[in-house]
Length: 160
Image (cartoon, rainbow, N blue to C red):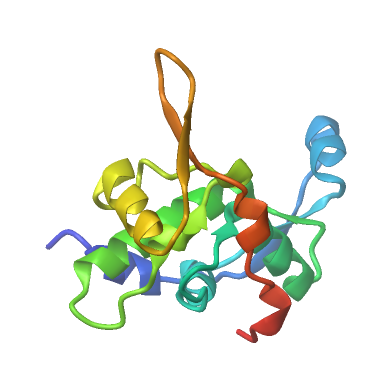
């Protein structure tokens, strides 16, 4: 059997969305509730596709938007990260309907080294759209969009 493409994985909803009740008290305290959403990959792709040129979004804003949409307390951070990277890889793999995945930052405005083309591609694309990239760290450099908060896209403007 042939290995699934990123686009095959993107379209495989695996009976999602679903809300899982978390029992771990530490997790409940950290995330502020028991009801954790696991959203399908296509929902992340849909949001990322709508971020206009010059605007940005972070994984945190996407997760908050989806949890409100589905009536959950929070969205699973692990699957969110996996599915956001999956949406980026699937877009890169396609010759059509590409999404501007480089506009989706990690929390805190950090660039995502797991995206296709790595930091260099994301940095180049963001700089072409007028964003300034800064580095933090000495031994292990991390890259951030300076003042990213000033360019966040208001997700309440989109309907998915």
